[in-house]
Each structure stands twice: as structure tokens, then as C-alpha cells.
Picture 1: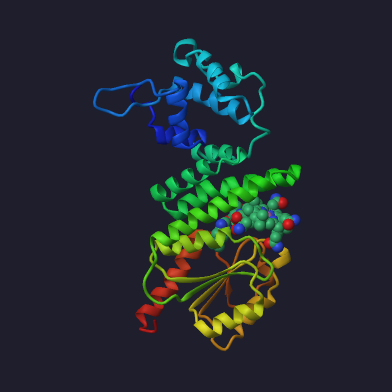
Picture 2: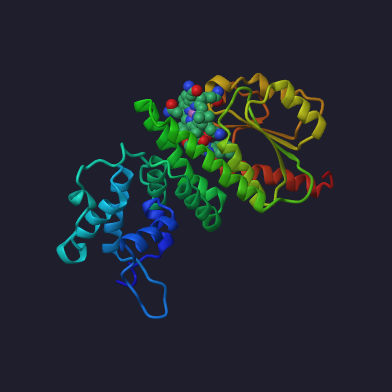
Length: 314
Ligand code: B12
């Protein structure tokens, strides 16, 4: 039992609720951790988790916490009666209006998807902040954020719904990545310029890149969303970046003339990266590089920074 027991933080992440919510459920409704080893923090057992899962589902559907707790406390102990899924004791069988598909992603992504469905900003932010601190930016983006964002997109494409979930989630992701960037501001000149293509509003992958560069100690300058090409070229000419990363998420914003304008700029960058699923490989001007993922974009940017450093040009 000791090995299977979980801390409050681990349970909160699995369920996609804030630790403070767990504490409230414990103090007000008696749904606390039942394993107690003297001298250690109390731990949640699999039976506790089943009860809390019921509590989470019912409260997400609008059942009052007191009523939800009554149902939860009645749940049979799965370690005594065999495996009991929360659905068996669930009065309606619904889960707050559907789920976000996250494929084969782990419990943290499932918890985050549930928190997003409930529009629970505190739990979303807590889950992301914990992952960033524990696993770093690249792993958090690839294993936690991308699956949930892609799942929201998939669900939206199928139902035209979830716009409110998409907006809240985007805001929480932005805030968490900005906090991670602020926590490790690199020193040295900013020789990497990050920009979205003209009219491009999908900034999150670029924000992830900014946070990952900060984590890797690489200084950057971020122009953000919807940058007209004339403004981009102006920024290049004024700051002389060694590399420019231009993000396009959809075909509509992927005009290759923007890349040609960078290559023709008086202070042409050493490296021009066309990043994002909008760009079509067969339309890219010669000399433009297309990174496939966040890790590659980070390592290419860091390599340019290092090359400049070694040649004494930074
Ligand atoms: C969040 C979101 C928004 C937010 C963006 C907020 C923000 N600050 O970024 C808002 C609400 C603003 C928004 C607006 C719109 N959106 Co939107 N949005 C999304 C969503 C859910 C996530 C975007 C994201 O960050 N993806 C990151 C990851 C998940 O993308 P990915 O494709 O898996 O990544 C691939 C590569 O990019 C690469 N990769 C991943 N990360 C990184 C990082 C780096 C650095 C690199 C180099 C590569 C890389 O690996 C992946 C595998 O190929 C997507 C769904 C989706 N699947 O992306 C829709 C989605 C991109 N949006 C879509 C649409 C249609 C729109 C709107 C046109 C809606 C509208 N009618 O207004 C507008 C577009 C406005 C504009 N002109 O830009 C469509 C695009 C369809 C298409 N292919 O053309 C999508 C796919 C949703 C869908 N299924 O319909 N959106």
C-alpha cells in the first residue's frame, strides 16, 4: 500500500484540481488521505482516489459539494470489492459536457485536460507550473501542453465548441511560460529574434521557445503576434539579430515573401528559421531552415549564439 499511496500534489495533478481544493474537500467533507505512517505526511490510497474522482466529476457537473461528498463516501472500497470505477456509482454518467482527447499522454495531461474542461484556471496554472519546475520547458511543452492544445483543437474542429476552453487555456499557458521566462533572464546581447508572421495570432509555440531559450541561457527578443513584414525588417535592421524565427501556424499566414524579405534585409541574419505547421517546405526560399519541433529550434538558436561567441562577434 505504501508504494501506491500518493501525495496531495500528485493526486491534485491526476484529478486536475488545485491542492487547495483537495484541502477543502478534506476539511469540510472528510474526503482526506487515509494512510498515515507516523512521522510522515498523510498519503492518499487508491480508495481515497476513487472517492475523490467521484467528488471531482459530480462537482464539475454542478452537484453541490455536500451532495457530491455523500456519493463519494458511499463508494465501495476497490481494494476490498474488486475494481470499482467511479462511473459505476455516478448518478448521470456525464463528465461536465465531454472530454478533451489527449491520446496516450500520461495522467498529468489527462488531469490538465479535465481542469481545462472545468475552466478551473487555478488547477490549470498549478499543473503547468509544477511541470515546468519539475521537467523543464521542452518536456512540459511536448508531453503536457501540446497534447492538450491539440486535443482542444481536435474537439473544436469536430463540434465548433470549446472556444472558451481554448481561450482560458491559452491565457494560462501564456502566463506560465512568461513566468518561467522571467525566472531565468539570460544575460548578454539578444541575438535571436522571435516573431509571428503577419496576421498570425498563434503565439504559444513561440512563447514556449522563448521560455526554453531563457532556460538554456540564450537571450532573445520577442515581437509576438501579427507582425507586418515591414516592421519585422525594421526590427532586423535596427537590432542585427544572428537568427530570426518566424512562426506561421496556418497556411493563411505563411506567405514566403516574408522570408525573402528577411533574406534581402541590409543586415541579413545568419540564420532564418521558418517555424510552425503553416509553412510548406516546397515554397521556402533557398537558405531558410525549417525546425521540426521545439527542441530543434532551441538547439539551432543556441548553436548560432555559440558560433557568434566563438568568433568574437557578440
Ligand atoms: C490555442 C489556439 C488558438 C488561440 C491562440 C492563442 C495563442 N496565444 O497562441 C486563438 C484563440 C487566438 C486561435 C485563433 C485562431 N485559430 Co487556433 N488554435 C489553437 C490551438 C488549440 C492550439 C495552438 C497551438 O499552440 N498549438 C501548438 C501545437 C499543439 O501545435 P502542433 O500543430 O501540434 O505543432 C506541430 C508543429 O508546429 C511542431 N511544433 C510544435 N511545437 C513547436 C514549437 C516550435 C518552436 C517548433 C519549431 C515546432 C513546433 O510539432 C507539431 C507536430 O507537427 C490549435 C489546435 C492545434 N492543433 O494546434 C488551433 C488551430 C491552430 N486554430 C485554428 C484556427 C482555424 C484558428 C482561427 C482561424 C479561428 C477563427 N476562426 O478565428 C484563428 C486564427 C487567427 C490567426 N489569424 O492566427 C485551426 C487551424 C486550421 C488550419 N490548419 O488552418 C486549428 C488547428 C484548430 C482546428 N483544428 O480547427 N487559436
